[in-house]
Length: 178
Image (cartoon, rainbow, N blue to C red):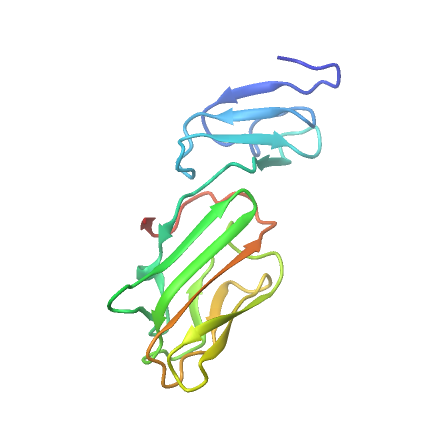
């Protein structure tokens, strides 16, 4: 397929970013995607005429990824429901946690790799079983960690957030399929 603008529909294996040269508006159907639960990713050439500027389409979906094993600084999944999950759909990142911080040594609880970082700071209220009842969690676009101030005398904390990201599509998936 071709258009008068020079854009075209292309397909093949691997990410087109840094590999496939095309005009803006072109599309690439990646047919072997390992970073998408559907097995494919549709890319759109958003900028430039070289081989960079490709953006994963809005339907790209990593599925839920269990990252409980990646919690740091003494944070852990709550015994009855040890949930720490992350997911990316298009340019939106979702996080869900059912965590305990009674042994935590820091507010930082999960390192976020490239492809998973919020574009700006977000603050959310979390349900906690300590005397404060609600505490804040933070995901900072300028930092690589999810944080929670809800760790002092904490029995468990449960909550979720979603945030927009400007990161490129992740090149690998964290944790395991949830």
